[in-house]
Image 1 (cartoon, rainbow, N blue to C red):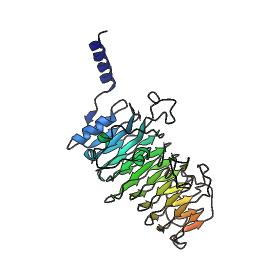
Image 2 (tube, rainbow, N blue to C red; image 1 turned 120 degrees about the horizontal axis):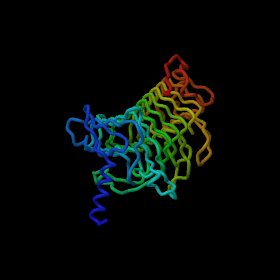
Image 3 (tube, rainbow, N blue to C red; image 1 turned 45 degrees about the horizontal axis):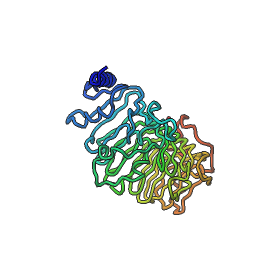
Amino acid sequence: MSSWLSRFFALFVWVARCPAVELQDGAYQVFPGDDLQSAVDQAAANPTVKTVRVHPGIYAPRRRSQALIYLNRRHDGIHLVGIQRPTLTAANAVIADPKSRSSPAIVNHVLYLGDGLSSNTVIQNFKLTGANHFVTTGESLRIEPDEELRKGRFYFGDGGAIKIYHRSYPVLRDLEITDNYASPCAGGISIQHEGATNGVVWIENCVFRNNRAEVTGAALDLLWGSSANLVNCLFEGNVSNTGPGEGENPFNNNGAVTVFPRSRISMERCTLTGNRNGVDDAGGVSVYSRCIFSGNTLDGGFSPQPRYELELAHGGTVHQCLIEGALRDPMNSVKPSDNVIRESSAPLNPGSANLNPNKIGFRAVP
């Protein structure tokens, strides 16, 4: 077969395997086998149609890259919506090097949500999984076009399921973030606003389960100068400090959620149970309202340390919460008159009936 005929045949096969994304019923319709990034890019270029509906199935990366899907400022306003919770994965065993420790992952992040995204950008109803500390620095300008933004190891390595960077304030709803690993931090979601807190990341009705991090915030990590609001989220089975980290590591006993200095988190009606520690918060200005911290005594971690439910190194506001287990509160922020504080207990069953320890309606996400 001649060389030109070979190239034609290869192109024909590639096109046959990559059907065009359909624009139908006021949205771009994506099915297994379609190119997700192409659909997102088409929605970015369309001044009126900003919704991408992803139909049931598994969507995996086709090549090594920083992300399965990336959104930056030109994608602001896109609604990426799953139907019947399709799976977005960082893994592709066919392409991955089986000898690599990161196998079968071939992207840094399942989703990259970059600078310039407002709360008009919505990610809803997906399962995100498969991250395993794969790291590449290629194609950085395509994914994040602002050359003035610094991109260090936290940018590339943190946030196995989702990386949120700089002036980025998306809305995340109805996500299942499970079985992801990252180093140094945040197998689940890493938020790196770097002081650009004119907005806030909104996370609602999400489940974080069995995520791991080499250092901090196995499920959720707010790096310096970041901000997030969480409502009705479940954290279960997440483990931080699984190794010594990369280089000097001042952290050895972090929780499923880590809040760095100059950062702020608001958590309302959230449940943390069965993790290796609950929340470690060094921000001093966070608010926890009607949350459950119970049985966060899971084994694991590089350095054996006593477990805790909530650690408020510099204080915070805690209102009508149930805390069953060790509380670290040197600033005496947690008022017994406004909260229920009990001795340690076994992890809860998140799928059980609604919890109501002091006539306040707690709802554990199933």
